[in-house]
Length: 159
Image 1 (spheres, rainbow, N blue to C red):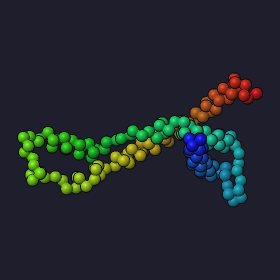
Image 2 (cartoon, rainbow, N blue to C red; image 1 turned 180 degrees about the vertical axis):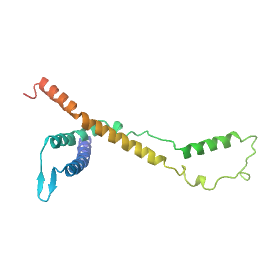
Image 3 (cartoon, rainbow, N blue to C red; image 1 turned 45 degrees about the horizontal axis):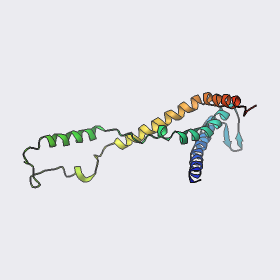
Image 4 (cartoon, rainbow, N blue to C red; image 1 turned 90 degrees about the horizontal axis):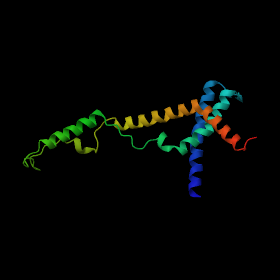
């Protein structure tokens, strides 16, 4: 029961986002106006409305394709810092380094990672993958819709 409520809540959350995107597309196309309120229904509007209801289902069924968890880009700054640490470790011989004799970059250990844009690259990658999958879904949704119609007709649900 709890998982069904969570699925419905996620569907509604994704549907709200899709309806906002649909409204923006319709405003851009001029098929939706507010003064006076008017909706011009055309083939493309029906097409986008069908996609508005299908994309949230796809997002719920395939969350790993939309938002992959294990995306980690190593920026050139992170790579340079890792190579620097490896170089320092390779030069450590016969306990020559001691707590008194070690000099360190005082700013290096203020944060657990270097100050770079690697997190931004991860976010950009996820955003790009999501955008690409949504675009492919919108372009090829007639194939999915035709497949569903064939399945439903073959099972005698639609007459």
